[in-house]
Figure 1 (cartoon, one colour):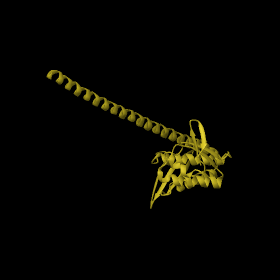
Figure 2 (cartoon, rainbow, N blue to C red):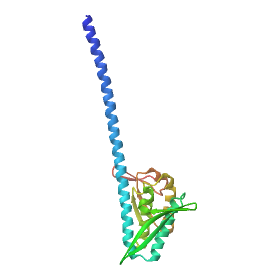
Figure 3 (cartoon, rainbow, N blue to C red):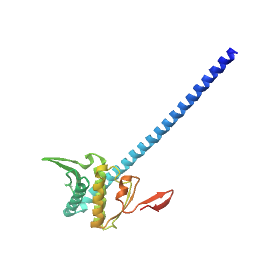
Figure 4 (cartoon, rainbow, N blue to C red):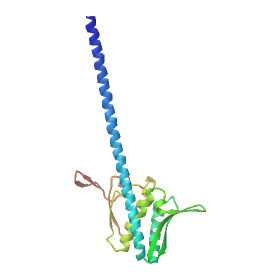
Length: 217
């Protein structure tokens, strides 16, 4: 009997150990699954940022190509609009945008510079070298507004997950600039986004769920 009891005791211990190992294995699987989801989100966010920056670069390149068709007065207006937008949105910075035009034979070229005044010092760098993607996506956004005005297009913008790289500190300034564009220039903007930072600034809110659109406010 003592041998049987010992075997039963060992079997019970092994069963407890097996249950414990199962629990640890399940916990490890959940951790791995959670890591996969987090990694997937990071990859998606990274891909979204790359698309936004590529879009910005394309907008600036298109602007450069059109420089040859713009008059000096038009270029000055573009520079003023960019500077005004930057100073409205980044209200804690003393930013301005400079566009330098160069002649290369029969072709005019342009380079965009971000200029920041700090006390008596002035820092100037090419826009593509500026700090952070927030500045670049804002410039891209303002360029779209400028060319819609210049080309006489309908003043209606659709923004799909745009400007998500903008820091929280500048969201209020962004919507101040947008409201001025709406009021002074007659723009209407449809913004498609998952970014909850923007909800309180919207005039109307619609939510898409399983293909169904419903007005929330």
